[in-house]
Image (cartoon, rainbow, N blue to C red):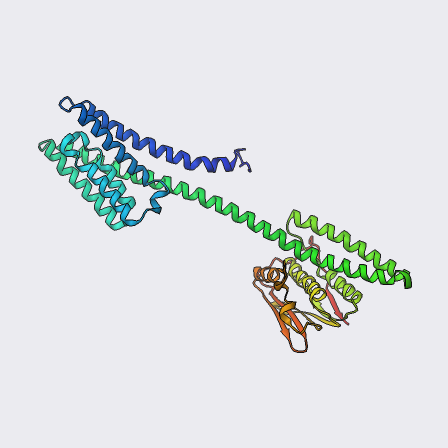
Length: 403
């Protein structure tokens, strides 16, 4: 639950709003029905049975009217909706024969219901016919007097518009509340997806590198203790970086250094006895583009370590006036490429995550199995409409590496 600028609880207010709107509608409709019942009660020439029957009429009429403001109304079939509207019309017009001008306030309910239930054109035509019918009915009851006829005509119009407006308002408030709840659920789902995606992209690489270097250190500890000590120092650095990454994921978006990822990729691949050829040339990349490229590089190295027995890897990064492209090609793909696809295993979301990240910036990602047991991962990102790094940003220095 989060408070608004006035300190009010937004979730409580959003839940209360539909209830208040519905309570207002029910109260207004009930008051109109009670006023009609009071007029019937004051009739001296109407018996008790007729007065009780009028109460039944009003209860059924009011129930149908309130039905149009509930969720159940949209779930009713057209046949049931039109049947309920016909019953309401009978409860509006038939009692006129018994209670005459004391029942003339009820047709306003029918006019408003017609606007709610029928298609717009037919709804307005029916509402107009209801108003005209009450004009003639009151003219008959008042024997041609102008004032009662004008009063009932205007009263029927106002009641119909009031019923239509309040009912529609209550429906809109309920729909707005439901849409707000759905947006909140979507926001939570997006945040969970972001958190899971960032954890996969950041920790998958670090854990793979730690495992690889730990195995290398285990082999070197007796024969080459100095080299093993150097590997342990790198393992410690990667572990600290993994901890920093986890904290960054919890706090929000994390910018990644493309330069650092290139250096790390060379180190990790060398530790795995993979011959690396890097041809990297870029300058002044926007922050988001640089971060996505670093993520692609990191995920590509992770896939190489997990799903291949690579002996060489070619990494190239090229920037022109409008786009920047990173491409990775490695060998050692298994004979059955399907088995090496990351999405075929449990929890394999790397390529899918990369596609989502690249697509967010309007780029393209291609993951393709090639002849001679090779795999190519290529991402192309546009440089236009991206926020370029400023003086205060964590800039990657211009980099040109060919090895």
